[in-house]
Length: 210
Image 1 (cartoon, helix red, strand yellow):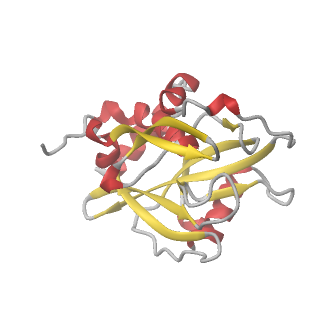
Image 2 (cartoon, rainbow, N blue to C red; image 1 turned 45 degrees about the vertical axis):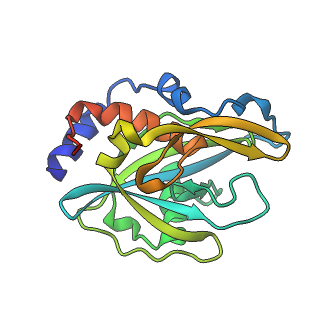
Image 3 (cartoon, rainbow, N blue to C red; image 1 turned 90 degrees about the horizontal axis):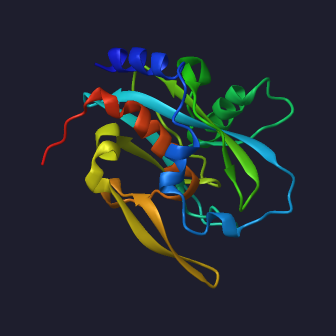
């Protein structure tokens, strides 16, 4: 099942991607309210797929609390591009190794999704899709990562887990679409990236237990 899924996914990623139309479905209502005076910076994040308990899983992280716009949020492992990186794929793998202890040589790269601009921090995020044949052994870096979260793809595809939530940011109150598998809250850039990924894989006809 997993190998067939990856084979089909690789072929789909060679075709035209759903792009911004898919991303914008999960965009917060205040997304365009923010403008950063910082220069555009590149970042790479890793959508890490692996089999576990006969299910296909994706690894996420919950960031530690800090004085910044992404404090405490659930996101993909990854981080900013460094000049020493050969390319953005190396960025995603390097940062993921630092954050959750994965071994880059054990991960096969299958493709990329549409880059996404994050106005509040002025990062352009490049989502990289990778997979490993066995469940990874995770080790969270405690200064950056509160915990590693493993989510089955079926939970993300379940329409019951796509809803909305009210948020507060400074003096602003707003509603944003979220993914809520296992009572988690995935929103913002991560949800927008997931939206495109989910649109690509929906054709695999995953079934849900009611």
